[in-house]
Length: 194
Image (cartoon, rainbow, N blue to C red; front, side, top):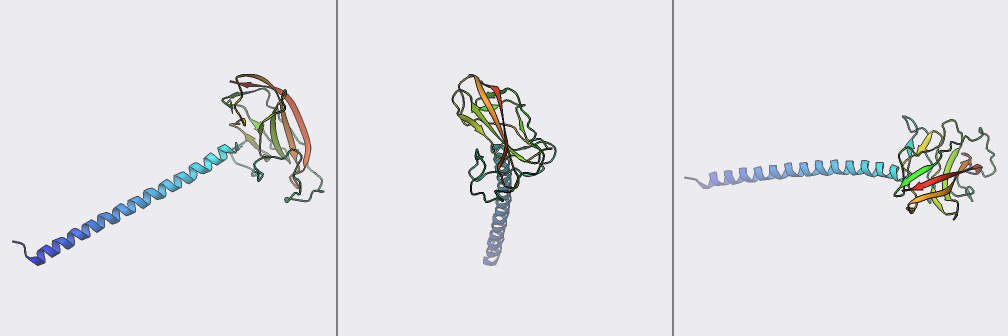
């Protein structure tokens, strides 16, 4: 038969077993939570880069891109420029522009292969804008892109009705010293929305 000491020992052993099981469950929960937090951090980082349409042009990222505070590139440079001396002239080589040709967009997203590139030989930043020729509406505007980087997965600001549109690609070159506009390049092209 059981005596009170034996019952107390068994109760104590049972309590210790339950405590050990609870501790294991807590450790597992903490491990799973940490793994989920790390995964979410990576997912948010990847999504942020996709949202900003930033892709490396080669195997490494090269210089960093410049994201303007309001996420849009001003059309005529920065006023009250906090980044540099407004009077500092551009001393780099003449900007090189690569024109992509006609572009096809499905549901507001550029088809694979459509890229806007700032060639690695440039010494200036480039920004890209797509404007509909008949209305003058800006349907896409990029961040400043550093030399050697390209934009893929371009998404229009609004989905266009199906059809062909006459459009203008405006490329602006910016002085890296003060972010003043150095030169503009415009190219007419056909934008197909499907």
